[in-house]
Amino acid sequence: MPVEKIETLVVGGGQAGLAMSEHLGKCGVPHLVLERHRIAERWRSERWDSLVANGPAWHDRFMGMEFPGYGADDFVPKDKIADSFEDFAKKIRAPIRCGVEVKSVRRNVGRPGFRVETSEGILEANYVVAATGPFQRPVIPAVVPESAGVMQIHSSAYRNPAQLPEGAVLVVGAGSSGVQIADELQGAGKRVYLSVGPHDRPPRRYRGRDFCWWLGVLGLWDAATPAEGKEHVTIAVSGANGGQTVDFRKLAGRGITLAGRTEKFKDGVMNFAPDLARNVAQGDANYLSVLREADAFIARNGLDLPAEPEAHVIGPDPKCMTDPILELDMARAGITSIIWATGFSTDYGWLQVDAFDAKGKPKHQRGVSAEPGIYFLGLPWLSRRGSTFIWGVWHDARYLADHIATQRGYMAYTAQSLLAK
Ligand SMILES: Cc1cc2nc3c(=O)[nH]c(=O)nc-3n(C[C@H](O)[C@H](O)[C@H](O)COP(=O)(O)OP(=O)(O)OC[C@H]3O[C@@H](n4cnc5c(N)ncnc54)[C@H](O)[C@@H]3O)c2cc1C
Image (cartoon, rainbow, N blue to C red; front, side):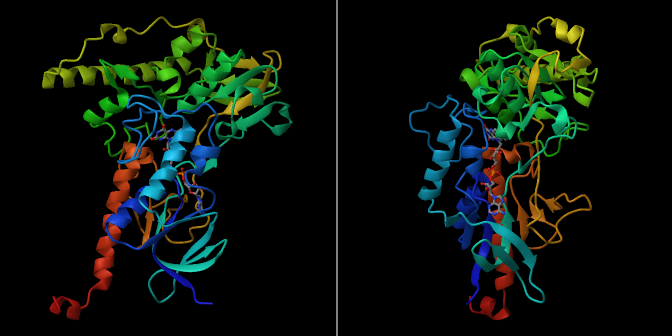
């Protein structure tokens, strides 16, 4: 049987794959998107039921993407986001095949391009874009053995409070997922412990503008590299309940017991690092720095935005911060479940090319990998802070499409073709 030949293969039909398809289409590059499940599958089935976008509708979308029934400042539920990605794919007529998994990609020997093994057969591609997501494999640190007798799930497997057994719950990790899940569980009447690591927590809104706007005008989405020591610092933001600033003191005031980073577990006792106050203080510093930069921006540009002095007031520390728990007897605390909101790692086992360093990390510059013809999209800090987010991946995809189009130009070169012009 003849092998199907594709100019550019995009692996993954999430937002990154669709953005890539849009821009490749605009550059006139023939391509195919392969998605092993459905379009925007992770928004459909790997997130909890009540999740809404972390950014308002005007921001968390591609150009031309619509959310019927939602206003510009609303936080759109995850299913509606998935629906609108599907609509977007139809609108741009994305050449996408769902239900097809890419099993391996290997460089051809002695000729350009790659041999691609899929669940539906072999194909060949000159260029391959890995758009399989920033958050591929849930990470649960090896802290609590299965034999400990508590239910343990990753945040990507959490759906709603009814899923958990009776009893208290420990949520580990206080990024956007951890804080939202802890808050929901506490609201559902559960006793909740929340283990808080280092984080940024920008104000949800300040002086009449959402933080997405502030990060945009202040150039913070465009930051090219994370600050020293902040490579893995999560952003704690939430669009839940109309969108509110994540405030750990308020969460404690509502009854959530805060603790420092989860360190180790032995004989039924969980140990937490004595870093809670420091982590919260660093989050406060990040929050206040955004307010200060916003004030300076308003003054510099003479904007008429209402002053909000009360936003600068940080409330008193709750008891769980001044006298933090360092050891917790899980059974005595009645903890029957742990939710690990501890992030994800990548999984590029299928991409068998020379584009990774000794630790298996993609080697690339703005997504153009060390292996000519292979591209990465959607990775954290691919080109900037915004690279994993809906709007950011759009801009990175444009750059990669342009790069592929340029490379195609080089490959098409012959002296005769120039003379013919
Ligand atoms: C809980 C949570 C909430 C988030 N909320 C927001 C938000 O509000 N706003 C925002 O801008 N960002 C948000 N993000 C970040 C980011 O937008 C999402 O992670 C988004 O899903 C990333 O899109 P992607 O296309 O890069 O990757 P993914 O959505 O992970 O898509 C990759 C696709 O590739 C497919 N795939 C993987 N391997 C293969 C293979 N071998 N063959 C074929 N297909 C394959 C997968 O099935 C998947 O559909 C959130 C992330 C999380 C975890």
